[in-house]
Each structure stands twice: as structure tokens, then as C-alpha cells.
Image (cartoon, rainbow, N blue to C red):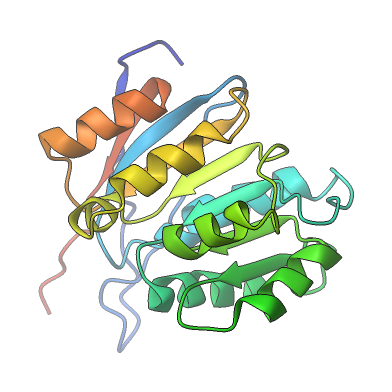
Length: 212
């Protein structure tokens, strides 16, 4: 996609099934090659996890098993609750597939997490602080990560994780796909996106409100 291109994505028509006035199918496109990636302004309730997880799982399906401690995809989330939620969704999506995923966050014992990483995982969901703990102790290597997702980037910045994010990104290969999701696109978020992404494409999704 050309640099600085902005794509506006219109929401599909919602289903009118009882109890789900705003349920709809979410589709997305991702850029390929290099470290290009889209910036996405997406509100809660738009199928955001499926938007990045399903294409990611598809890309990893034929890549074979990741080496121990060397995930191929990294998803950063601001809180343990969100990280666990993302992991639950990914496990649901990968049911019956060989793609493995694991979640690490603070407030839990680090040794079981290190042991799980030693067995290998293709997708790693993490909070920044715990990931840096694991990196510092050489319990994980980011040298083979080809896909990076920053989920709820606005909250990551609000919670003071900007230095941690930059440290993590510095350990990633330059040739990767990067995606940044945020409910808002402030100047600070735009600055972060421009520093992390190459030729970013901006995609905005707003759920359609249905009056019943």
C-alpha cells in the first residue's frame, strides 16, 4: 500500500437477531512485506481480536513449529485481563489447529511461564512489564517475531508503557508486519505509530448504531 494512504472502512449491515441488535461480520485487510502495517482506530465491540487474530493464525498455519523460546507473533496488551481475554479468543480460533499460543503477565509466577515458553509457542500474548522480565532473564527471544500487534495502544501509553514498548520493539527484526489498534488516535498515538510502522495505512471502524 502507498505511504500515507488512508482507507475508510464502512461497517457492514448489522444483523437484527433478537438480543444482538449490533452484531455484524467484521472483515479486515493487512499489508504484506517489510515492516509495513496498518494503524487502526477501532472501538470496543467491533470484533477487533478476530480482525487481527484470524489473518495471523492463517499466516502461521503453514510456517511449522516455532523454536523453543522464539515466538513468531507477539501481541502486547496493557493489562493482564485483556491479555487473558485475547488468549482465550485465540485458543478458540485455533481449536483443531497446530498453531500454539501462550499468555504471560505480571502478578503470576514467572517460572511456569518460562517453562511454557521453553516448550515453544507460535503466538505470544504479553503485558510489557512481564515480557521485559522474561527478556532480561533470557527466557524468551524476539529475534524470530514476524508479526507485532499493539492492542489498545492508547491505554498502553496512558499506563506509562511507552519506554517498555520501545525497548521491546528494539529487539524485534526490522522485517516484520506491525499493527497498532487504538480506540482514539491522538497526536501522541499518531507519533507512536509513525515511529513504529513503515508506510502505515490507517483504517477506522465505527460500529453502526441501530435504533430498536
